[in-house]
Length: 183
Image 1 (tube, helix red, strand yellow):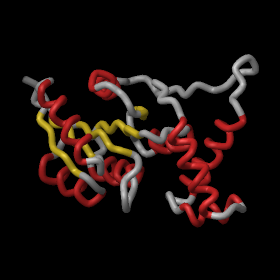
Image 2 (cartoon, helix red, strand yellow):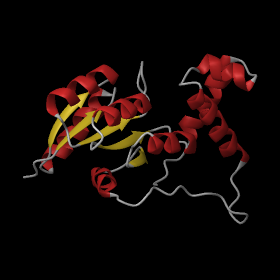
Image 3 (spheres, one colour):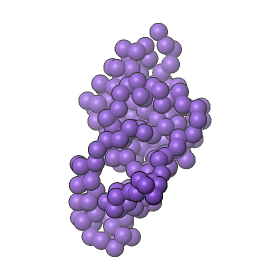
């Protein structure tokens, strides 16, 4: 049995419970939190060795969770897990101290392997032979502006010069049709 404790921070209670159960079956102690405040309280109480943090949550987002956890516990190894991956948020997560950034769906084995990474995460960059489609470039730009605005859709829409509802539709449409890529 492993002595390591892994904290799972995800607002989707069913997903958090399932992931924590899978980690327990692999010999880890687990603790679950569903938001920013819960994550800090559980980290204070349990002093986990590792954390899996969902990017999108109501209130303060996963990037804020990563920043606060790494500030208080610099040795904590954090993997960011999201269903809405973008280069902008991946870069930001790594800058804040996450050891890896994975998109859902992913396996427990991939999550555990991400904790073991020691080399820097390299993001694929397009080449002239492998040009990025225009809709992906738009998605990346929207995500970058949204990240710069701290997740505030109204402010991001203002900066982009579009109506808030238009931005919400673009974000929802792309999230619904984006195939999940492995890192």
